[in-house]
Length: 130
Image 1 (tube, rainbow, N blue to C red):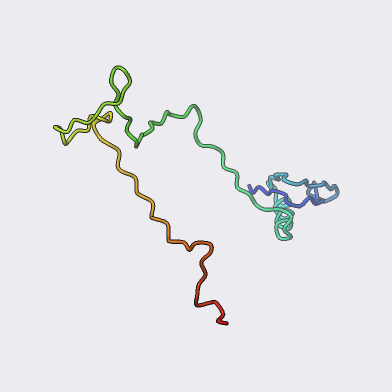
Image 2 (image 1 turned 45 degrees about the horizontal axis):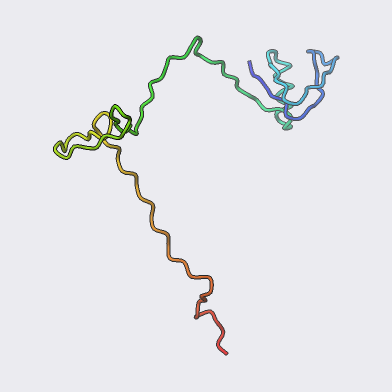
């Protein structure tokens, strides 16, 4: 069973014999179940009045399972007063300043901007000599 979406409103047959007509409206979805409908929608497609569409029904039913989020940026550790905790230099393998004991990876630095000319300077090679 093919489905077609009308992109340009056109009149067409509404029964097998073609004795009745119908205006197929913009964005209307037509189920071409019978051979005469498939033939008519094929002509609509050939003229650019309709396009064949595929409509997928969702496979899952019911509530989705909760997804665990992974936080890449560790949180800073705080003491009872809410102040940041410092790293202990005597323990090089653990960073007490962050929860979980691992510090975030340093972010890449941006490249330095290219040197720009000052607005008043001119390229001497393009100036005309008088």
